[in-house]
Image (cartoon, rainbow, N blue to C red; front, top):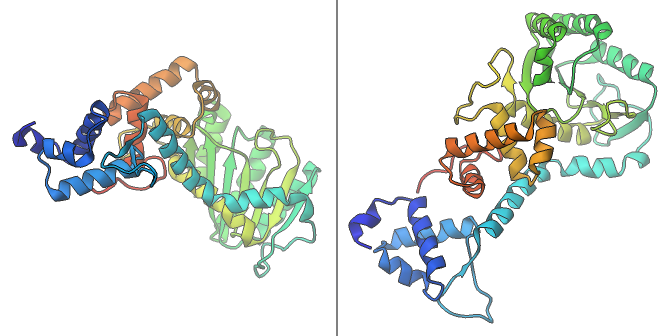
Amino acid sequence: MSRNAAVTRAGSEQALAVYQELRARPEAGFDEVADGFELSADERDRCRRELASLGLTATREASDPGPRPLVVDPDVALLRLLRRERDRLQDRLAATSRAHTALEALAGPFLRVGAAPRSEVEVEIVTDPQRVLRELTDLTASVRTAVHVMHTGSVRREDMAAELERDRSRAARGVRVRAMYSRRVGTVPEMTQHLEDRAALGVELRLSPVVPMNMVLADENFALLPTDPHDPDSPTILARGPGLVRSYLALYEYCWQAAARYGEEPGEPGGDGLSDQQRAALHMLASGIKDEQIARSLGVSLRTVSRLLSEVMQELGAASRFEAGVKAARLGLLDGEGPEPVA
């Protein structure tokens, strides 16, 4: 290949050309292929690092010496890449998983929201719905700085007035309130009015195609959530202490950033050109979730999931789901980070 043809490729395009040539010529070494493209020393190093970072090439074992790099199949590389991205997200919630494992052993008196934070975690499993309501009432009176709420569905009609009254009380004391709802509630007329009423009281609202569980957090020291995220009627976890609550707050912040502000159109694209629904489908695809489960999570048909992923591929300029996954990882779309700088 001539130098003029090679210089038209930059960054990842050069790496892709080298990778394709290595696959087509398994007997060739990296330097031999790079010589064919007339790459400079800096371009060789960049291509070598990029292919290794994407898992498309690997270092041979000491027992298998030679100049040829170990070329990894695209599907294997994608699986490893997505697993690595998923592990980075799961690390943020490691403390939460450990706390769930120890829930039955963690019993004792509550640390009140207004008390000075303590390092230990205090957890109680509550089966009485009236007790949960009393805790929410006490929380409204004692919270100092912020309340963060997550709803998987609509608020019951008989609970709407009480929720608005709590909003008024918090607003009067300067407490920040954030609430996240499933986008499906926007189709319920009563909920549409309820959201407008909450927004008028200063509540920050966002809508998301996927809300993992019901959750109430306050002052980095109080958490209320179900023992089974898939069963809203399951017993409730009441937890106090920043050691656990901050882990749940990290999950909330991640979901909050992925959600759309209240008042935006459902299909309104984000800064990268993907709508929130497309982004949610991309995240679930990258986590290894099958199309059927994606459809259930989004509340759409399999045909709609197929269309969403096709739109994601088109937006990213990808010819396959594999390529879309690689580009999404490079752009930081799988972990909330910004695009990688071009070398």
